[in-house]
Image (cartoon, rainbow, N blue to C red; front, side, top):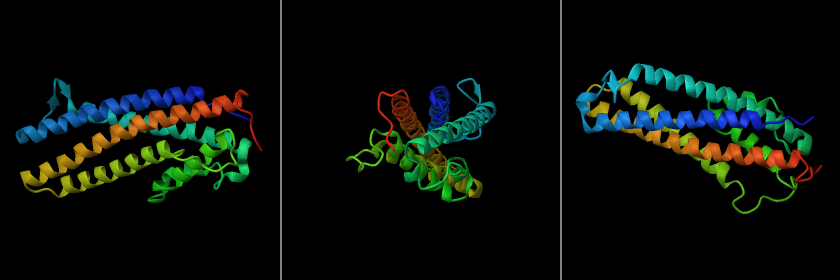
Length: 209
């Protein structure tokens, strides 16, 4: 049975928009710190309490992750209807793959590629040139932003001088900017893949298999 992913897709895209806004705001905070190191650890920025902003951003990221995984799993279930034999992993991996340390850097991407192929007009045809570019671009920026954030946290915890703190801030800024780009690409990916499944489910593109 096919599941309608449209409502979840709208929710995911809206939440991603909130995440992008937080990334840009917190990136501005880092830029302000780099231009004025004495501002490091300030309680507010542009009249906004930073403790509340960081907490709100964390909650927004968590909400996005939950809704995104639910949307992702729903699309995986639809892929099972159209081309179950092409799916390299069972539907549960569309959820569980995100929670396995280190493996979450490649398992969900594999699942996403399988979903994409099942959702196109001919699931059994060869990949078109550049067909997975959007998926690969989003995934690359997401992985690199994660790396930048991990480096930033590690450097910040080990910093003992102002110079070391500012290095951590530079990595933090890079992480926010990369996250913002990944967020934009994620919106495009969600929109595109949902549109593909909607067209196929409504008969605009006949299901194959």
